Length: 303
Image (tube, rainbow, N blue to C red):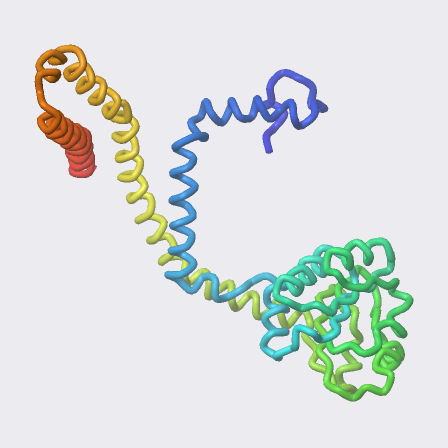
């Protein structure tokens, strides 16, 4: 977050809650909190949406997890299919959460360390088993998603045959491990659609090139947004500068009616007083809105 030299003079072991006040004051002194930050965040979100909807940059995923999920959806895998997730590391955790988010509800996690499998399975409302139980507990699957740190194949021909248990339906195997977890020779002799990480990396590189082609258009949107923000910021400065005007105008009106011309107002009948109130309210609104409008127009003309 910040270097040792940027920190205030106190021990680096100070607990986080003691840093928060200092951090807040630092950001406030730089003008990065309050109204300005609100404007920046809101305009950034609007700009990001324009880039997302106005270019094709989001149509070409480059992450392995996104590409693997897209492949799974292209094959019309039913959300109720039994998916075996082999390995509970970062990649498979991201993939599993992605699957759950999109409605897949029959997820089974296998891991060498059972405790890690249980942690991930708990988040997914799924089942957890040790890797040693894969042959028996992995039966009845439709999809295998595997990514472990093993140096040799996790799923051999012998183990895969045990997992099939005579099942001849076509299976999907997504192997995201380097080196591979799934022996590719199995795909030569079985009814398998094998998606290996090398295939996904080739797609990712191609998509990255297409994304780079969108950068010119993205930059144009950002440049235009910066110019728009300058106008928004100037308008907001006018609004803040004139924020006290309504109260001042009301104060003047109140003084005029209740002090300066109080005796004259008292002589008016009810209908005349109501008319006076309407006139004063109208003038009050116009007195506030007209200068604000003129000030904004002047600023915009100068920008």
